[in-house]
Amino acid sequence: MKKNVLKVVLSLLLALSLFALASCAIPTTTNTETADPKTETTENTENTENTENTENTENTETEETGFAVTFVVGEHASVTAYPTQDMTSGGTENATVAYSIDKTTGKQTKSGEGQVNFVVVLEEGYVIDNISIDNAEGYNNIKGSADTGAENGYRITKISADLTVTITVKEATVPENLEDGYQITFVTDEHVSVTVYKAQDLTAAGEENATVAYSRDGATGALTKTDGQVNFVVVLEEGYEIDSVTATEGTYKNIKNLGEGAWRITKITADTTVTIATKVAE
Image 1 (tube, rainbow, N blue to C red):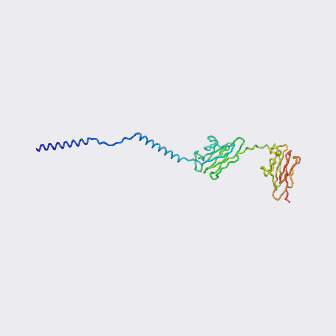
Image 2: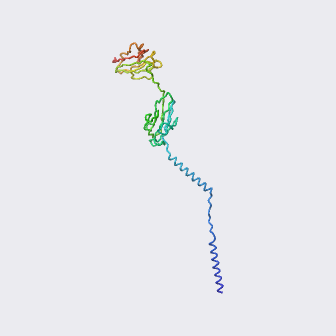
């Protein structure tokens, strides 16, 4: 009886041991999700684009532009703007605007030390009349050919604001050959001066404080030795009046008193001296 009970107990223990061993051998299942390669590719692309956008934004924020210098140019001229102080090459022709640059690097700057370099290109027969800049406090100075080394070359320095540069031109005057007219020399006392006019139109601009004039055509003002004349106005000091106006004999036809201090000597045939004497007004 006891032996049978012992066999049963041993059989139960063996069965339990086998069950325990079998339980340990069964593999544990883990829920592992497999990544979708398409999703990973999309995420990588988005990350790359975000990185590029961030870099582009940073570059845009750090890039600096210069102050704008606008050129207003009339007919018969144009502007060539240069990116550096070298005005021999690399310029932008027919420029209407340029930007302040660093004189060393050539990069645009608003540091207040920037400059603009340009050349005024003129049509034949024209010269620069005037160059003006609208904002005197927006730059230090404007330098010409003596400093730039270029004909009609200019440099605006230490630009600290947007500027407008206005350039006007005029026709070049051809130097007259004074030998084409007879010379008239004025001799006056200390109470008078002479204003000379090129033609009979005394409302036009005259040469004030003239000491010399030349015989000219009365209508056109061109120098001539044929029927030439001289037109002038005597300007008196207050309290004085003309005493006499005389010219070298044999060198003209007549002297005309036109009134209000205006005089005309006609048909001049040789160099002459005009003497003007004054006296205290009565």
